[in-house]
Each structure stands twice: as structure tokens, then as C-alpha cells.
Image (cartoon, rainbow, N blue to C red; front, side, top):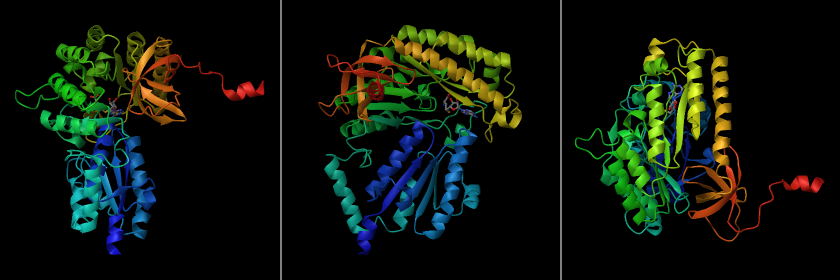
Length: 470
Ligand code: SAH
């Protein structure tokens, strides 16, 4: 009886923040399933409840804290429930202040470190439960032939099409606004062997697209003496991955200063590496860029975009922007506005500046742009960007593009083009998940496109309700 109870142990992971956190949560899930735990959608019913946190802006941290506070009465009512806190809120230092603030949290895990939870649960004896371990091992054997380096959690095995693989942990840059180096520790590149083994393993479990991750991914290998660089890594991942059925490779996030011609030429040359670059500029004004400690000027960034476009035909370029950095004047903001107007990039993630503990900007520069002004600047950029992207996407109208299908959404297949643009199309003939399908684009907007299989009946674009009314 007791054994049965242990075997049915369940977990729920709530993930906030970036793709790195998604990858970290997946690795924790994999470890938990090895121990016989299974995922449940309802957090209230989970025996192990983990919040994987983000603190890049105050709003993200507030979300995590709110959720954490709501767990206090839950833990009081069910003291056997295990509560875990993971990610950038914990950071790489001893979480003593957090232990005091949230005494009902059982386990603290630094970013990308599931081990403390594994050890905690092992000490509670669950792993020693004979049947639980046996069941978990059988599930693993059934799922894949040989010992895999990363066994996907059951709910993703065979269905997850696009996965993330961290290749550089931490960050050693010192952008004055950014908390990440304090929370994720110094830059550490993983070995090519480890990364390739993981990519092959994921491909064998049905994954068709891999995104290599790093805070500054184009610095890959710089911390290894005579190490490989990102372009060397891409070549190895490309050949090993495609041999296992991998269709697409992407990487993010790049820093403008490390985008070598060698890297760009490798992207252009390798057919399964997608023409898609994420390279944040953060601001358009040189004085603001200097105070952000970004290490380049607006002119440098313009030249970089030109170089990327010359070397990778048809490339999509994404950027990140921070508005309302301390001291940013209207004229300085306009530099950013005009830069985006001129460059016509495929996506801009726009964030309002948020002072973060420990950072140089929070310690030495007053957060003096009022919230309403930050919001006005954010919206101005967002509105302009929506028009630019609508215009870029219109060029795809009538074209036939290869779409990697990820899942079914509202009765339509949902997938992405090489440029990472979202496409929906209808097809009831077969299960399209994981296939690269040629789709003719029949409608475009700034956020998505609609397509059809070439030769299929045209899709009525008027909503059906309107026809009924007439
Ligand atoms: N390593 C990447 C970005 C990681 S953080 C880089 O070098 O650009 C993701 C994005 O969050 C950043 O690009 C930035 O636009 C935003 N961000 C980081 N710190 C911020 C802060 N203090 N306030 C507002 N946005 C911030």
C-alpha cells in the first residue's frame, strides 16, 4: 500500500522567464521522472511543486514572489508537499536571505542545477523504493533504445518538436543594467562532446529543431583555451544532428561584438542552420550605449546589420530594446526610434528599464524616466515595429515556404518558417507534426501568417458568421 503511494508521486514545474529556464525545467523534469515521478497539470495535486524564477525585471520577480507567497498556506496544510525554488531568484550564492524569507521552501536550486532536488528526494527515501525505481527504468527503456544523456519527460517524448540546448552557462559581461551575471555566475561553455550527445539524444526522441542557448551565445568556447568557436560547434551539431533526423538549428542570443564573418558564413553555408539571428542593440544613442556598457556604437550596429544581410540572404533579424534607461532624453530615445525605422528588423522585444539589485545602473544612476514616459516610448516603438513587420511579412504573400509543424492549434497546424515566422494551415489528411511542409502563404499579419497546401481549395478568409448574417 505504502509502495503504491510512493509510486504515484507527482510533480509540477511552473516556469517563468527565458528559454534557458525552459531548458532548465525540462532537465529537472527529466531527473524527477528517472526517480519515478510523473508530471501533473494541476499544481494543487502535485507532491513536488517547483517555481523556476526570473528576475530580469522587477515585474518578473513580483510574479514569482506572489506565487511563492500563495504556497505558504498550501505547505501549512500539506506539510509533506515538497516546494522547490529554482532559477535566477535563487542565484549561484548561498540563498540564506531567501531561506529566512520563505522558510516553507524545502529546496533551493541555482539556475541549471536540478541536483539539490534530486538529493533531497533521495534522502527522503523515495529513490530507494524498489518498485518506483524499477517502473522508472522500464519507462525509459521502452521509450528509447539505448542509454540517453537527456531523457525527455514523458509528456514531451515523441511530441516535442522544438527544444533548447544550453551551450554557454552564465555570463561574464558587465552590461550596467543586467542582473544575469550576478545570478547565473561566470561564463562556462559546455564541451562539444556533451552538447552533441544531447542533440543526438533529443533528435532520437523526435525533436526536429534545436536552439542552442547562451546569454552571449556567439562567445561560445572563448573560455576554453584553444577552444572551438560557435561556428565550429554549429558544424558538428549540424552533421551529427541531421544524421539523426534533425531538421533545423538556431542559436540565441548573440552580442553584436562577437558576430564574426566566419560565423555568418557558416550560417549561410549550412542548409539546416536557419537564417535567423537574434542580436540585441538595447538602445540607439551612443551616450546611452556607453552608459549601458554595451561596447559598440549605433554606427557599428548599422554596419553589423548590413554585414549580416549581405552574408546571409533572406535572414530574419531580431533585437531587444530597453526604453527609459536612466537619463535617456527624448532626443536619445528618438535615436532608437529612428534606428528601428531605418533597419526594419523582423522583431523587437521592447522592455521598460527596471533597476535591478547589484547592477551598476541601479547603484549609480537614478531611475529618472517616469513610468508614463517609459510606457509612451515602449508603445511608440511597438506601434512602429508592428507596421514594419506587417510590411516585411506581406512580401511572403503568394510564396510557398517550408514550415516545420510543431502542433495543432484551434483545428489548424501551427509551425514556423526558416525565418521563425508563425504559420497556420489546415490539412485533415494526416498528422503533420514534426514534418517540414511546403505551405503557400495566403494571408499575412505582423504576428502570424495563414497558409494552405499548394493546390488545395482556397480558404475562405471571411469569417463564417458574417456569411450567415448576410
Ligand atoms: N544576454 C542577452 C540578453 C539577456 S536578458 C544580451 O546580451 O542582450 C534579455 C533582455 O532583457 C535583454 O536583452 C534586455 O533587453 C532586457 N533586460 C535586461 N535587463 C533589464 C533591465 N534591468 N530592465 C529592463 N530590461 C532588461
